Image (cartoon, rainbow, N blue to C red):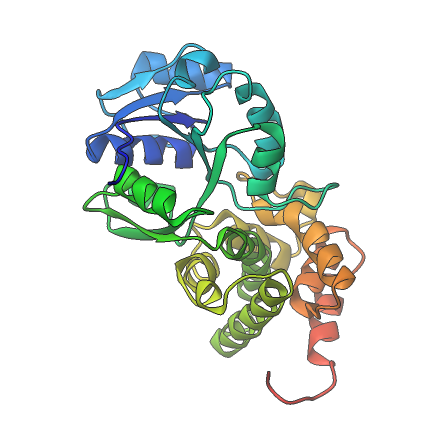
Length: 329
């Protein structure tokens, strides 16, 4: 018999956290939303609107928590903070939540320094928690508006993964469950870096043929990296792999793609603004991990070289175009 999770907390009221809170409320769950940032918390309390999702009113069924401890009483927690902030948030949650509470990470990245994936960070910080991952091709504005969206939710135990998909799923948000936690995490992290590369192609005006080549060869990199770290092939081909790569490599709604467009137009990485692009923080650790396990990821390496200003855009493009000819694999 499936366990029901009728009370869900969302930690983080950025665009994605607000959208997920709205979606869970539509699914009939009791939802508690906690925001650490004082200015955004004030906007939510006064106008029922997140500063990061303007024009979208928070459903009256979503309760605002004044403290993290209040939110931690929920039966399941959606942790919706940037990847590099997951450790801090998880550490703060650790003494507040009950044993075996599912903590579903909704960030897409790899922790710099430790080279740990998000579920590993949660397991390390919150002893006894049940880590899970939510990822896939989704834009916050689409989910907030109730537009049809499909994602993947992964947990080590299949029963828990199924229970959580039933808890957050609705007519508009369709989660598919999986036990390939690592594969789902890799797809979400790597696609952000590749989306920056796609943005560079668009910003430089290299054409649709180059974009198709970039996306296809980028996906080959993602698959090679996933295989080296134990991901399943079907996960790489699914929503959290290929699906997410297609979405974020083709739309200016993607912050990573938009960041790449600015790079392609000649802006310096440090001068580009416009929101959190997780790929900026993931590129270096992704390339380092690929090098350690002998995986060739030339597109990702080119993005890292651009971000660290070791290469110009033209030099990075040339490094890819002058690679030796070889069989497709």
